[in-house]
Amino acid sequence: MGSGQCYAKGPAGRRDGELSPILLVEDEVFIRIASAEWLRDAGYTVIEAADAAEALDMLGSGQPLALLATDITMPGPFDGLALAARARSGWPGLPVLLLSAHLPADPMDHADGALSKPFGPMELVALIEKMIGAPWQTRNHANGANKAC
Image 1: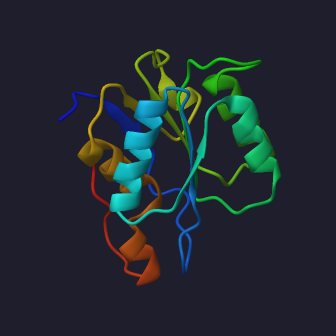
Image 2: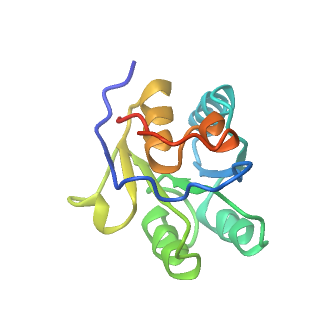
């Protein structure tokens, strides 16, 4: 579907038992709804935030999360790169995925994975499976390679 490029470091936030929710941060409502639906269809639980400030409040709530997926360009006091930096500092075990049409020159300096917009459901799900594992893999404690992007 999409033509997004993707980058990812190996499995990062995999948990035993049930997989914690993914925090999806996107100010464009239609992109957020579609991305969240693709992830839910793949079996993930998704929590949505419209901007970095809202996401930071959710991070601070103490809710366990499997991954933070964030757009870069958003309204508000700080953007997705600042959110990624704060998340990596305050929640060092939380994998961070950048989703943007405007990725930095070396996105892996800022996050554990990156996907260039536009992207399709298969690209998004495959990259998240690579980063944290598929929900069925986590629930069944399966070992094995995650799909590549």
